Image 1 (cartoon, rainbow, N blue to C red):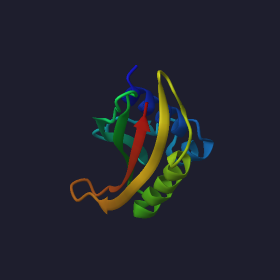
Image 2 (image 1 turned 90 degrees about the vertical axis):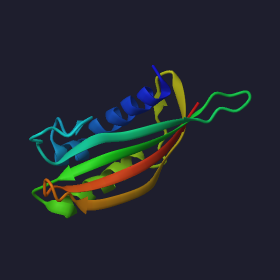
Image 3 (image 1 turned 180 degrees about the vertical axis):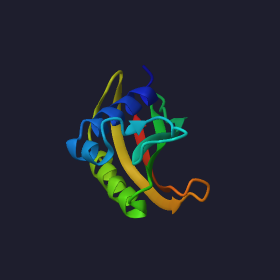
Length: 132
């Protein structure tokens, strides 16, 4: 398993294993794409970019990941509440990866907006991870 896939799996397991977050989202509230008629709120594992960060003696990768929190009924307040919970669960945590080592996982930014096309609220949380 690649380090990127192992990281995504560990993030999914950590988020889906939290009872408080599951209570906010429902049992199927984390996915890898926004469906045509989504059951909101939902967390979508969004864009991920991976770069080589190897040194002369150690392999390594840098990953930039966006998690999208989509909300409708409770609007921006609900999206930001869920985003705060996601940040608390992932920012600067230690997680075991299958076949790789997580050196760091840090939140690097967040933005929220209303999507004009769908009228849903979206909070995008950006993380930077380093794996070896």
